[in-house]
Length: 613
Ligand SMILES: [Zn+2]
Image 1: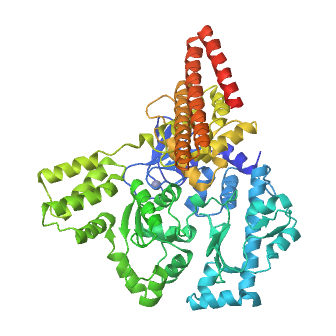
Image 2: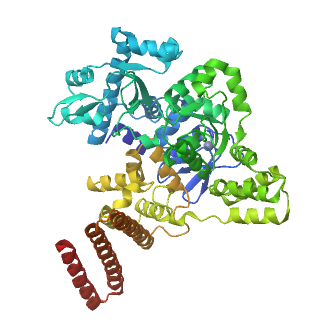
Image 3: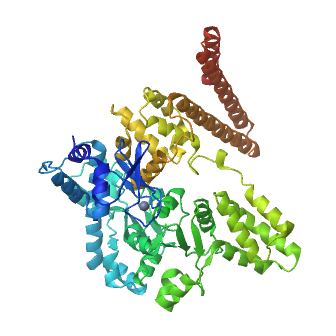
């Protein structure tokens, strides 16, 4: 047994937590009390004795007993482990070993990023880094800032990291997986980043997981190149600079969101520490959830009206859905945040932050510039303009409250117009038919809860799950992949085992799922598991069908009748098969043997004709 596991199994999280102050009361299978990590008057901190895990519904702090000690004593993993071991009389081994292949690979990839970082930094300070240094000087980045953000330079040889990984004896099989090297068709390797200014990207605990590289030659494309996805770098969950900003974010209870690396660096250098960057692309639901864990208030510092601002628009949509309180920071003079801080100074930027309007007021003001609200038509036009944004707020009460405020703001505090505005805002299409990956669906959540419960026979779902291809598109996709991997390795599916395989963002997701009333009032039993599985199957069916329908239409437009027919056939076959399978399940459950064999025969015939087509 790994040492950490040994410690975790010999101490009780409930008593460890109480040693640090919080009084816990038993409620059901869990204990709850006031959260030690944030100020509160009513308890939202829960500890599960069976899962040896804590979670706070207020500030979303979460983890096992080791995390708890790390968090509360602000110490490293090793130190927390040592503290616990010593306090409970468990002898410390000389060195703890990480045996499983996953951890080994991840460890190696982390190590490779460190070597790369050393190389990039040495380059920047040496003769090779002259162009990069002068670029930074031109942008007004001070040496201390370069140091603080660990900026570097990747040389143009294309062999620097190749040589380093070779010398350090990393096996070739790991080279490409590090995201630092690429393989040519002839099997040889070359550096992924060449002649670029390098920005290390860290995870929340401050370890380097990848890089962003800015081209220095004007004709080098793309201008910004990021590490490809690797086992340690998941783009959709990473927020740039969060590990440095999070303390300030907690203190100020506000995130400042900017677009690029240089903006985050420039604004931080000007003295604003709660800054993170989305790195030019639209935020993902994952990233928004990560931010939300630290603060619900966000000051968005990019212009949703700028050309090509679809990304900004989409980001704001997601922030609204997650119930974040958004302020829009507007900078004049067409300056980006970095330039603004340098040209106008920190005080001017602070003023922009302070005077930033709440998103809905900002939107209303925009609409008012276009429509005359002294006329009823103008008022209706303004309200109509606002409806889509207000409707993105998930919580109904919040939605209505915002709607009232906005109406009030333009001078409507009663009457039929307010009534119908509120009505149209209240009628929000519920997320029941949400596409996978946008929200956590009830079925994906429910089935996970069954899989993580102690119901006998829950393993039967695993082979069925392997057949569902859309699993990866779900918000919980990586959690399901962890479940499948654990089953494949022959281990028992437990909360701990699943949790250990996840990145931070997914761990938070898992905690939310486990501690929320995850089965919407259903028992987490086999029956409910079957229902959820069935619902996922239907979702897959619908998606496949609509994809095929789209292919038919596309082929029609392109005038390709053969392809249109092929896709239409495939769609028909698929529907037929799905129908037969559903009937078969019913018949099996009813024990109708005659029907079962008849349906099986039909299914075989369908498969054969599909194979022949
Ligand atoms: Zn808390």
